[in-house]
Image 1: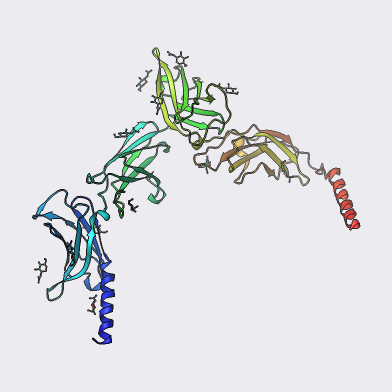
Image 2 (image 1 turned 90 degrees about the vertical axis):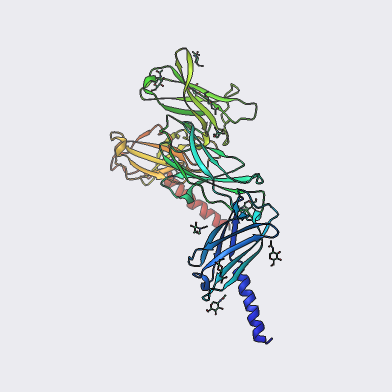
Length: 459
Ligand SMILES: *[C@@H]1O[C@H](CO)[C@@H](O)[C@H](O)[C@H]1NC(C)=O
Ligand SMILES: *[C@@H]1O[C@H](CO)[C@@H](O)[C@H](O)[C@H]1NC(C)=O
Ligand SMILES: *[C@@H]1O[C@H](CO)[C@@H](O)[C@H](O)[C@H]1NC(C)=O
Ligand SMILES: *[C@@H]1O[C@H](CO)[C@@H](O)[C@H](O)[C@H]1NC(C)=O
Ligand SMILES: *[C@@H]1O[C@H](CO)[C@@H](O)[C@H](O)[C@H]1NC(C)=O
Ligand SMILES: *[C@@H]1O[C@H](CO)[C@@H](O)[C@H](O)[C@H]1NC(C)=O
Ligand SMILES: *[C@@H]1O[C@H](CO)[C@@H](O)[C@H](O)[C@H]1NC(C)=O
Ligand SMILES: *[C@@H]1O[C@H](CO)[C@@H](O)[C@H](O)[C@H]1NC(C)=O
Ligand SMILES: *[C@@H]1O[C@H](CO)[C@@H](O)[C@H](O)[C@H]1NC(C)=O
Ligand SMILES: *[C@@H]1O[C@H](CO)[C@@H](O)[C@H](O)[C@H]1NC(C)=O
Ligand SMILES: *[C@@H]1O[C@H](CO)[C@@H](O)[C@H](O)[C@H]1NC(C)=O
Ligand SMILES: *[C@@H]1O[C@H](CO)[C@@H](O)[C@H](O)[C@H]1NC(C)=O
């Protein structure tokens, strides 16, 4: 053989092995093999089919590849004795698969070959079906689905994604569960349309792929009847949109931590005084009956119920069965507001925040105005860094002013603005009373110059 022929043969082998790698098949664990073939340009439209057989067993199948740019695919329904059966391959079965195309002279030739294909190491299960959603309580939803797989496959991992209908799947929340056919979804926004979808992978055999996503389900969450927040220390405050016929019934809030493995019982209770459409109160949490400022942790969740005395019984009227205090933070308002005038007529407003010390990021809103204006006309600005002071400029002379601040922690989702602090009031000096370039400053400048002079003379 000439050198040139050798090179041709080599090229041919290289080419054909490259082509072989482009036949990709998956098995759904029943009778279906789905294959796709990355055909080279010579074969994008010629009549081709995939054929397979299992040695020494009467298992056969074939499918015609639909012409379709370079990625041609089809699904083989395996048969035995030419009869369809429900379950067909076992773990040990290996298949030879070939792509056969006919040329212009209608001669059939094998173009690509997949040698000893192990179906069980290329499982792609059917996508989950019958996905459904049911409400467990006002704020918890149960997503359920069904999976179809052979009994040989015992271990299934499921991925659940859910999101608001008008946001993108790429921003969806993700949950993975093992061998489960339901998952409870918490912490959804009230009165919002959601959708969820599910896919599966078996984890008994290597090489499994994710199934296609099942058909998404949609639902709409309820308007909150009970809205609770936590101050990061020891109180939970709830507001209840009162059912019409219960506005004057004696009712109280009852809350306890659900997932406390320790021997500590953290709970809270307060009476909801009647006050129109919304009734609210503040629960001081106790731990085994004692007050502990920092008993709550990030992982704790609580069952919060509204109990009303109806007839001769205390009945649960509405409840949150998984209230996560740290994902519903509303910090206490800032305290100890103080204001000082600086030399140039700018005012320095200062305050103090109260919250657990692992909250590192807080945004602050500042409002200030002459006392006789209304708050809606106040000058306002937001500090997005953690600050405990802010400068107020351009104040009218000889005016009584007031300022207030509120905070939102920005470390954890779901934060709310605190209530407004108590306002601080002060009077600006009359015009012309030159802002006191105070003697103190003049003296310190002199002292500084003296000190510098002293130091340099010592050198
Ligand atoms: C594709 O077709 C061209 C021209 O018809 C031919 O030269 C080439 O060998 C073919 N390639 C394969 C992989 O058959
Ligand atoms: C696959 O093809 C090879 C080579 O032709 C052969 O040796 C092997 O027995 C075949 N295997 C099956 C399962 O048909
Ligand atoms: C072939 O691939 C297309 C695109 O990925 C897909 O929509 C179609 O269902 C596939 N057909 C078969 C028979 O697998
Ligand atoms: C090529 O294969 C197809 C499908 O099996 C068959 O219908 C056709 O008769 C074959 N052609 C030749 C020339 O063998
Ligand atoms: C969700 O529904 C499934 C099926 O009906 C049930 O088995 C499961 O207990 C439910 N989960 C919860 C948290 O209620
Ligand atoms: C599916 O599970 C198998 C077995 O654990 C693993 O080998 C495979 O990588 C998984 N597939 C995906 C897409 O995660
Ligand atoms: C209040 O009204 C609801 C339905 O609107 C009813 O189910 C409930 O029994 C009523 N409660 C009382 C105390 O009448
Ligand atoms: C909670 O504690 C505060 C301050 O100690 C107290 O003023 C308030 O009455 C308490 N509330 C309840 C419901 O016990
Ligand atoms: C309802 O609960 C409250 C608070 O625990 C209690 O004071 C009241 O006696 C209870 N009423 C009934 C009818 O059990
Ligand atoms: C929450 O408390 C209410 C009333 O006590 C009860 O009906 C409900 O089952 C509780 N939920 C959980 C998850 O503990
Ligand atoms: C404003 O007050 C804060 C708190 O006392 C202080 O840290 C800051 O330096 C003051 N700003 C000026 C310019 O004096
Ligand atoms: C407070 O900050 C958190 C975290 O950045 C954010 O999720 C939340 O929307 C903010 N709340 C308000 C009322 O801006």
